[in-house]
Length: 199
Image (tube, rainbow, N blue to C red; front, side):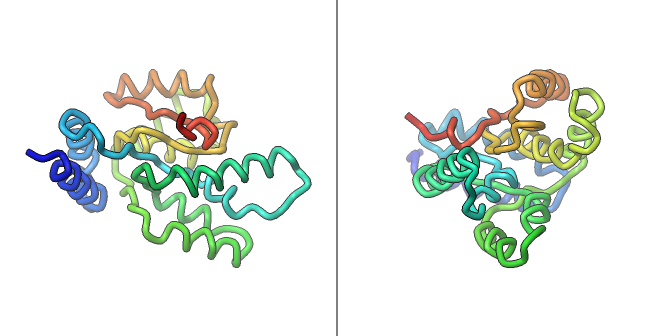
């Protein structure tokens, strides 16, 4: 079978699974992802876009040099690298970007209007709960735990974030990896835009 057909068919199946409003979507998607990795060697990798990334795309000018450098890196990734991946978000991302200044929130929501939305299901909620109770994530990081659980349960390749306190944190990730493995999942690569710039 021609690889281009396989690639298009897989993307259609994955989108169907992701949009399927049933609790079994998380069972079907990992199977098709593994199938695609075996049969479609040039299929695009998948990325969960966490809220902080969108925040950096709409940040106001500042004298904070680190903030501005991170914003510049985020914009560079968004403009030059994002199209090379299949990007996903969740309702939590939409809820979080809708907060704050109404005009900026509207811009953030507009940027995400066409993104596939990962459905919350029992598997996501259960894994997020385990992340909170079995790792060193604090109770106030419940939404962060859900972000990680979404990317993990749906077998995405990367979780892109600027949240280095609770998500892109090496010590926390070590424990999250253990919890994921015991639950039968593989934690995605968690990174900032700097680390996903390519060669």
